[in-house]
Image 1 (cartoon, each protein chain N blue to C red):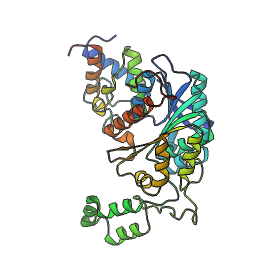
Image 2 (cartoon, rainbow over the protein chains, first blue to last red):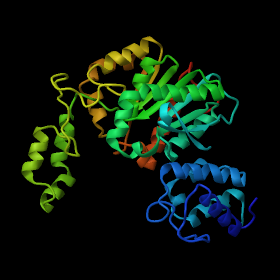
Image 3 (tube, chains in turn green, brown):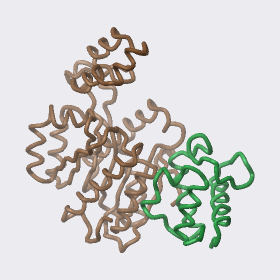
Length: 89
Length: 286
């Protein structure tokens, strides 16, 4: 299980790559938009990402986490996941 | 939760959310929509012991209005059945709650007529055929702030606005079917056709014991029809208790495009289900 913000970010990045989605940069970019103007994930890819992260990191998002604001960027998603995992910022 | 293809010619994309609490056999949910809003509903149902299958049309047809609607029209009930079969085989569910918006709202209503496994149905912002656009909706387009803005900017000419109003055109400019109910063929006349005989269809379902939760947003055409043309017939059905009508105080047609509207919709559905003695399960729909 991921223990640091960096490892959370890395796990999210790996999960995105496995969707499969092809980010413009090879390394995790917290500023990269997940939705419009970035990876342009559609609704199906978002729910697949949610499920895959929960499986990879063995946790579950709370309903309140599953809002558009959580999926603005890779970094915003990482913050939500880190909070759920109890990872210190 | 992985997505997978199902149905004839893999026409559907689906995702199953298993129940996380002890399952309330034999109830399952069929939810049209494969996004976060529908996933949140599926999760709430899962916590109440109800596994669900979310659906949408597979592939490029999903993004093509004409192809998608043709699929609903010609195979919609077959697709609903395929999804229910899948959930039944995977989780032993033999009774279903079916949820859909607009075209799929009309579709689940007709699927309930065709398949007795559907015990409860939630059509939201129903799509009606053969009724044209309601007068109030057409008038609103003429007097709305957006219409004036477009007139002043030249984007819309006054002549065209009046022509669209008179000809009962839909917002996208397409001609709406004749509201006389028969002199011109409806655009769609198959599996998601709902028209003037809505009350009769609802009565048929009620007679079979199906619970129906109609939901509309405040300015949706469906609300205008349900509380206008169908007001009298609907009142009798509402008085019977098996049909309920919920108006969501938001201004959106597709719920999943507005988080607040989607949340309100999910709250409405769960509150309604919790009140159904024969459909609800004992766990809270939280």
